[in-house]
Length: 539
Image (cartoon, rainbow, N blue to C red; front, top):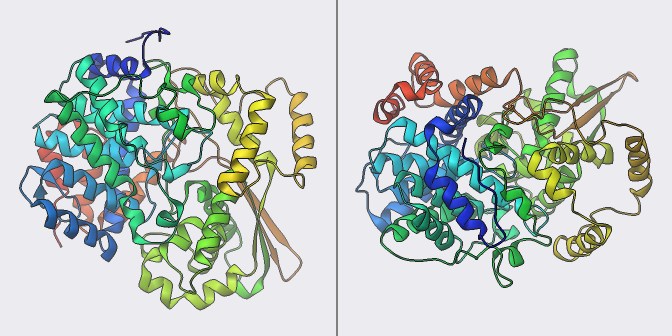
């Protein structure tokens, strides 16, 4: 296994580049390969889920109108061929449209790690082993960059700069660039980094370009480096560089342990369209519905959803922007937990169909009626479970272990200024103290549940607790800690199979969709062209 210590004199980008350039398919653990295959299938399903949306089709038309359609790379929504830059960007826009993607520690890397790798692999006529190697490389590098900026002005899907370096890393690997060229590719990709603005993300269709734009820049950066264009290797560390802008407190230790800790094994794939922080709330509602199959919506008196700090902040932003319009849109579903829950309670399911604008418009009145009964609150104990997951990761433990009280006070001030939010409020102080005191007396407090040994599938907990009060005085409470689509979940393969077959059904006969999924689980046994031929649209 490739291992290399970071020397003080060695820029982080050079460390990353050396690993990328020397990394081989044979270096990938079997669990990381399985995660990569599942991620590929999951992201293809996300594209299929959005293929009927006018907004996504508009991105495709706009991109091709400006650059032309010639090339070998596939647009998954239509089967058309185009150049690799546009193919990756358009596929990424489709996968972004319904927030039906996946995450790793830390970031929604799949948009660039899968689609930059796929487009360039097709263009360069690479095989499936080379393709999967690029997918793994992109996830490991992009996830680490996102983690290094975890304590910063951007979070979640809005950490769009990870697609710059992810796409550059994947492309550099497929172009077989050496360490020096790869260093320049990474540096060029970050030389004019993107900074997502919340108004452009939380409501309008410009959100679809959030991963598409940096992905195209990252791909081009590697091709520029191959032709001799240079970048600055110290771009991350420089006092006027990347970390100074994108992190309130940089966590450079998050960039370490390549070849030891595998970020891709933290993969968690969504089984419901919408924010990843809401997935376990959806599962909890589904479990209550299955237990109380005979209840009517008018029997519900109230719904209490306890969520994490991450969930409550996303919900706050989502509710703020959705309140500017009476119309229920996909964004309301994606980022407003009360709306998400209302749809699931009403429809009994939440798929790409229930995020369709026509369906939402038709059912808007009843959704709004249910939504008024739902209250979303923060429970610090749930947030602590997320933090323990991060601290249990090797890189996370090193980085977070260096935070001081002074750091936390600085963070509180910056979050108040940039987010108009409180990192920890006086109102919640009692709950935090209660949770903290309890943890002090538990020797296992540093670790959440699960096996966190190196090279094991690693659970990232994003818990939610749902309590439904009924008119007859009874209530049902269910807490779900781990998303069903988490790579470490025993149900993950069946969950992603169900998602893939359902969404691929818009394009393929059921038997062909099933064959494509099973082939994706053994991707290296096929040529890339053969696999993509199985996905060609038939109607």
